[in-house]
Image 1: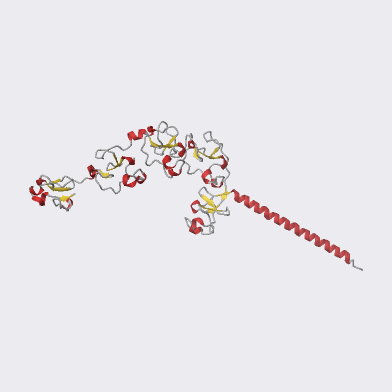
Image 2 (image 1 turned 135 degrees about the vertical axis):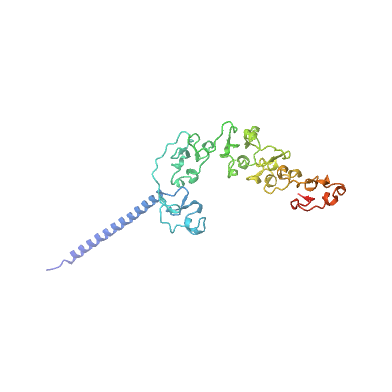
Length: 376
């Protein structure tokens, strides 16, 4: 029986072609599957978020505290917080069950909240209705706010205290009845029109400052001259900003106390005096007031006000007195026995007890030694 070699060859070639086609189809399918997996992974990671105070690493997979500056990578152990906070190689837990650093988790589903009428135009309310963000944030506050357009400074609300009346976003809604009570708001009848009150309800700044006084006041619109209140002494009735609320000046502002020289003011303890240009005598930030530390700080003051020095110690509080049975000289710094009649001065050697008892020119002994004459 003869064999048809041509038929066998054609059959083998056809089978080889079919196998090749199958392999190409499988390769194409495998490539497409990998591409879809990569796209799905990318989409999934884009939905992942860090906590409000966290930042992503370069892969958007891990989150570190924002204090690190950057998350993971070369030199992570040298950043604030060290390797335990800023390196990602040993992170195993997700952010929904662990503190930072952690593996980013999907953002929880949030139902957008319609802005209350007291949120400014072009802004949206957070889930509580108490705070407002720019509408570009899409969602105001909450998990993942730092990843939205504008970042944490536009879309996160945890540390926001500025009233929306200042024109700043994000902000605390102006007329929400249960808004935080410590959010600074205009005090009716206290600050002039176009100004805002400081957190202590004592001073007023131009409303363009956003916040009156406090930390970093010099960085706000208008700078320190408009927005810082540490050295403010001018009453608001003068028409000048920043200013002291007039009612505060009348009831609470320091006034000349008996013993403080004219043109000076006492410290809060009525023990020391400073030039009245300081506004406040001693205390926190005294070195920032007009005249600086030399005029307004009292920590190292040793001179009595009777010497004409400023700042000074009130004589009635600090001036020492002579021991029993002794009298002071004309300067109030030395003491002699009362039998002298007069302590020191011209003719002291002629008095009862003579120079040894009544003259003070060479006296160096302290009165605490119970020796007369003595130096206070």
